[in-house]
Length: 380
Image (cartoon, rainbow, N blue to C red; front, side, top):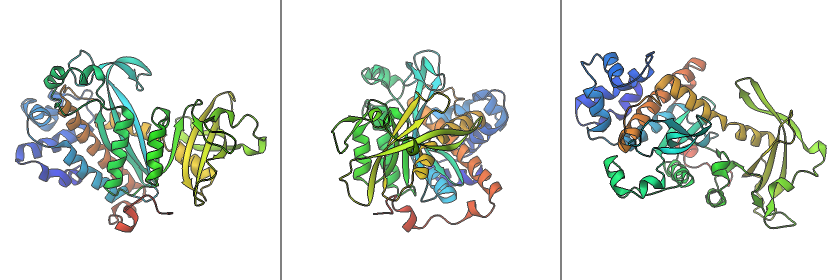
């Protein structure tokens, strides 16, 4: 834990928050039945939770600056030019109405509408490991339309409403501007359905495999706004390929896959495809993806990228179970970002340690050179 802590220790002006940040991360990964201010303080040898509370709520430090350092640590040890950026959100069940951003809203964690906060996250999935590298608390309009309520929760007046898609765009833009090494972006249909975002990624020549809904439309040789679900019913049987898109909790996730090219008049070295993923047991259940990629990209490669989206669920699961991602008692906006940043730092450290166990030499190599980290657009 000390290695990642050393990356951002300079972000604190005094020794107390430096020491408290390290103690907090160590407490988050400790095998405690409950992780709160008192138990983390006891684990750290403190007489009470005051130092923990000051770290999260009162002492001046910038969680975004710390996150930049954590991201640098991830890139140095796990960075790969073929990595995938994955966007997803997750809910944090809460009681009461005072925690920043809380309201009754859909929680993917619970699988239903609950009183919760929702965080939008960006995961980095590379051959050596996967971890979370960005986060932001989603603020519903019930909050941003009530500035006095926002002020009580520590939300500055300049923080306005942003959709989850807008938050995702901002995170990926930051990854591009920071020159993180990656090749693909993927997300579920809640994000992938946005034509505006897909267009933005294409304009930046960022390759992507985005889930979408059956009602989404595309341009074909025969029609503008052609529904994606109409592209596959007449497809010859030999066009469907049975493939695994990765291992799940119950073994390989095997489906039947097919793809149809769309927007055929685009530049010759790029392709647009609509991909269908059909359940073997229930063939009427079909999911769809829209892709932008190099012309030479195989269906197997696109399936791999589509399947990598489950890596973010794995990150959420391990960050909750091992790093206390959802074990917090802060109500303020900055406190949420501080806690999640330190939990993500702990998760990144555990991910790097596991990578070293699997391949002791690889995870300790030098950072990627500028030629590999400058851009995901290596085929142009």
